[in-house]
Every structure is written in structure tokens, then in C-alpha cells.
Image 1 (cartoon, rainbow, N blue to C red):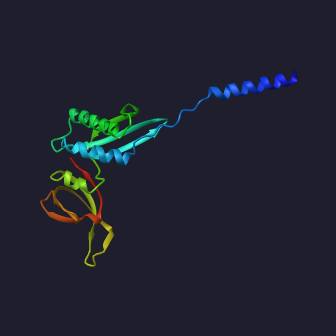
Image 2 (image 1 turned 45 degrees about the vertical axis):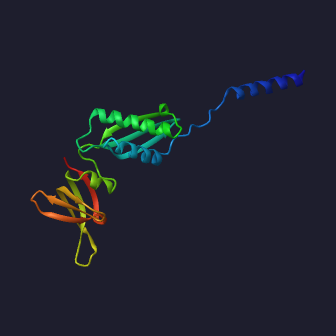
Image 3 (image 1 turned 90 degrees about the horizontal axis):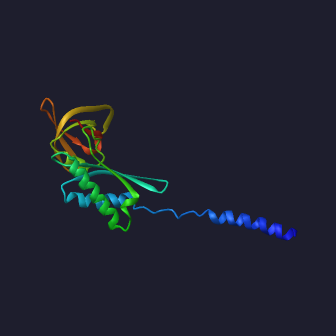
Length: 183
């Protein structure tokens, strides 16, 4: 009799453990890959993908995309971008239904995060902070300059800005501390 009771207790423990089944963790597309695919597809619609971030929590993924368009970003552009991002997710064998996607414009005070943005925002007003080179070609970190200016030219190593008093200044990209839109 005692043996049966022990077995019954063991069976109860086994029954409990069988009821708790953990689902395998979902896999999600890598944000860098999603960004690359989406950027290419958005370009076809004349929409620039400035930044794409992804946050995965508790089996869900949230995608945050920031876009820009020369003529300005409309609600329709955000919808188009959302559909393109969904399609990019699906094209890689993932289900876009597992993702919350938020698309918005860069905004009036967007902080530049890549060199590409100097080309994208040519002709826009910016606020820029940079170090000037001195005669020895070294940077004087205590003498940072801040200007409100118009971004008028961009090349591989420098940009040309025009200040409010119409002074043109060439700034080496390596000396730029921070640039943001100033609309």
C-alpha cells in the first residue's frame, strides 16, 4: 500500500509538470537587415529612411521608423512606409503581424545620425556645432563654434554652410560635434 501512495504522489508531480509547456522563443528579423531592405524599397517612393530601431520584449517586436521626403512627410507617406516595412518583413520569411510598426517624420529638430543626411537635407536650415582647425591643423576643443545656417553643399569630407549674415563657411565633417535641423 505504501508503494502505491508514493507512486500516486509522483504521478501528481509529473502531471503538473506536463501542464506547463513553454513555447519556443520567436525569432525576429535583425534590425540592420530590416533597415537595409526597407531603405532600398522606400527610395523607390522617394522616401528617405533616416533611422529604424527595433525593440523586442516578451515575444513582441516594435519597429520605430523615422522618414523624410523633400516635399515634407504626409500621413499617406507614413502609410506607404508602413506597408513597405511590412512587405520587407514578409519577404524575409517573417510574419509582419508579429510586429508593431510606428512610422513618423523626422521632425523639425531632427539630429543628424549619418553622413547621408547632409545630402538629404541640402538646402535646409540647420544648427551646427563644430571645432575649427587652427594653424597647426589641430582642433581646439575649447573653441567650439555654433551656428544657425543653411546647408548649401556636401561632399565626402566637408559641408558648406551659409550663416544668417550670409558668410560661407566650409566645415570638415571630422570636426562636427552635432548637427540638427533648425526649421
